[in-house]
Length: 140
Image (spheres, helix red, strand yellow):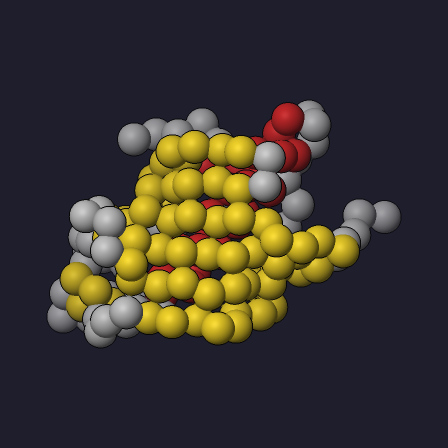
C-alpha cells in the first residue's frame, strides 16, 4: 500500500519499516509495518526483535508528519533518545513479518515527546510494548 503520509519520513528502501497509516487520532496513530526480507537487520531470514523499537519510532514520526501536514508545514527531523519499559514477547522475527503498531503521545514538553507504544503481530498477538522518547530540535 502506498500511503501518502509516509513519503514525508526520512527512511527509504529496506530501512522504511512502515507501509501504511491505518488510523489517526489527535494523540495517536495506528500503522502497519513490515520487516523486509532484505532489511539491514535481517540475517539468514531472521531479524532481532529489538528492531520493533525502530518500527515504533517510525510510527511516532508518521504521527508528527500527519500533524505537521495538517498545519501545512514540513515534518521536523526527530531522534529516538529514550526507550524505557520495553518488553519483547519473543525471540527473533522472520523477514517478511507484518506488524501493527499503536502509538499514543502521553506527554510533550518541546523539544521532548513521550509515546506509549505497542507492536502486534498481524494476528493481534503482542510482540512489544513500552515507552519511547523522541527529541525534535526546535526550529529557529
